[in-house]
Length: 96
Image 1 (cartoon, rainbow, N blue to C red):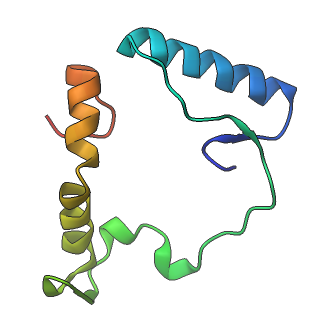
Image 2 (cartoon, helix red, strand yellow):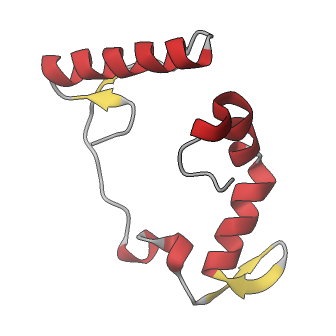
Image 3 (spheres, one colour):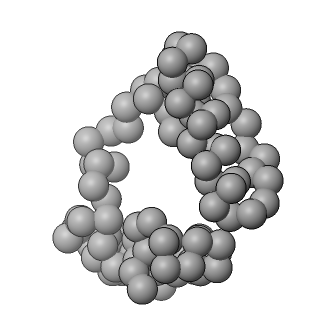
């Protein structure tokens, strides 16, 4: 299932409730739309669990392990810092 898409009325109601709970917790409006799901295609096998990979890949940092490339991407894009800023100690999937 797409993360921000729904297939039926039950999923739509659940998504709206989760969005409202997040808005309440953050104290601000979330503008991400909840959309009707469309056709989904799984990524190729080599994309699965990329963050765990041990193969060396070429990046702007040179040749590094996939897991290290993913860590640099996470830090470089600023996502984790923003999630920590918004959610504080309750930030999901972010090391504290």
